[in-house]
Image 1 (cartoon, one colour):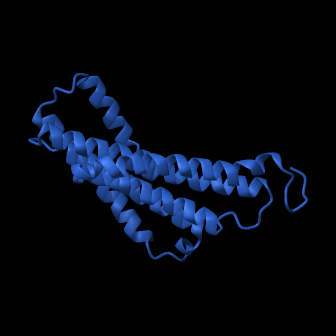
Image 2 (cartoon, one colour):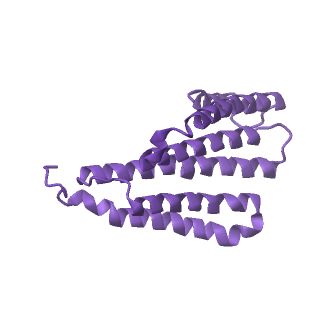
Image 3 (tube, rainbow, N blue to C red):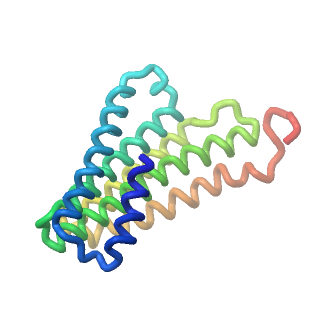
Length: 189
């Protein structure tokens, strides 16, 4: 996975104006595809592990799958000969699967877990936390669909933005307020 940021850094140094030759684009696509294949094999290897029955582990697994989707989209966006519109749509999809899917999913799962643990709650991933995570996944889908079907953008893009804001507000109201309260188990903070 270290090769992906390294590739992006080298690409920025070698070709700062994005005037890359088709050979350079093909090399980038190939490297991203190799990393994506390795991540996919890893994800498939762990898909039936008993640990995935734990909600927190399942949340991290889903976030990891979004990482792999982001790698595949990055490889596809660098394929030589794509139109500028297709490349832009794939790069935007890549950015959002990485930001909302991988980083957002990991951040939400960790924020829920840490806030519950620091407040002394025995079950960090409860039903409301699961619904928040599901809402995040639905938000990501609402953001990605307009990239494939442009006519849906007028409805789904504002919906995705409002959903993301709603997830943040609901988390802050439910989990954020626990930060200033005494622990529920009576132990010192």
